Image 1: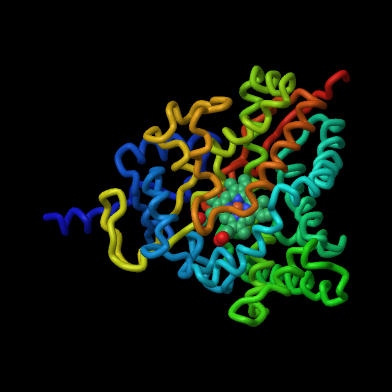
Image 2: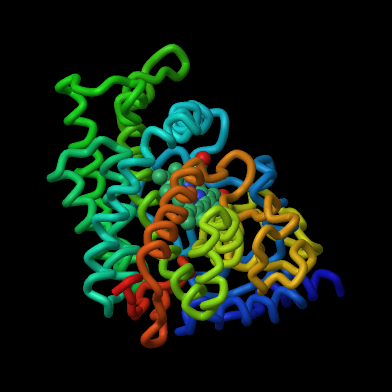
Length: 402
Ligand code: HEM
């Protein structure tokens, strides 16, 4: 009897991961589903479990003995893209990469980078505010991360330009499951990563100031990190650093356009912007298809999961679990348990880039709100699974004092 019930859930199709959606649809659908199945099932992409509940997702990401990232780190799986630390490795190998990476996101490093990030924001946002009618997702959100990344990574103008061009097309190709294009652009991103490494040969950078140089000088087991892994790690950072902010930033503009009172409050009280950013990060997590695989038969949230089953970490849904957050769909400035949000993951693979992401979002709002009022001029366009968030945001800026 129990066997049959378990089997029935394996063949269930609780949701369609690829249906077209508007800005509010996915959250509404996940809320409905989560109430019945915090561990939901979809037959898309060959079948997978989806962690929609907060506790269930937290259990999967913090238990390395039961769940691994080494088989696949996203759903769907693109088979040909190679091992890229740190996300594709479990400890202990994982630790040697994270130790190096973490050092570049400390508060002093972030403070030193802040003027460059503000300059990137201003250079992109000022012309858009002058232009007035814009697509803030395409013309700003999809550009800023590459500009910031070039500063963070000490890239030459050519390399950074190339990343800007290739990474945008790469993400578009993943979205439409265009395997051939993904394969060829993934190869191109590896070449770019290799070019970044080669640039270091001239000895112009110190390991203290440059993440790539620090990886090249780091040690594991008494020797250098394997060069293929350093290459994979640089390649990993290019894409992870680029994708999430590019689908996230437009969501803040949509939210603030729909809530002019909050927009005005933050304009008058910029000291509340960091708190607002944190609540936006909870409400609008851009990842729903990052993955783990069960190492052996196990149970999560009462659901039997078989060895080898892929599991989607639906951060987009977990952060709105009413068992954790009161009125989870409501924006609350200074929510008392905001620190519990799980938008940047938890444990071993938690996001090292969170301080940089927060800085980009805060400065974006500081610069946009101090210069303009803005409002939507049409419906936002949405990215598809495995991301959640906007890829088109038609917006009108009205410059303050104009
Ligand atoms: C909206 C912004 C961002 C969000 C919401 C976000 C979220 C996340 C999450 C949830 C994970 C954990 C994935 C998992 O458990 O499998 C993660 C990992 C990671 N993120 Fe972010 N991220 C953001 C921005 C960034 C930025 C700007 C960078 C780099 C500059 C970055 C670099 C990484 C890396 C390297 C990992 C893998 C960490 C590891 O495996 O140890 N992220 N991120």
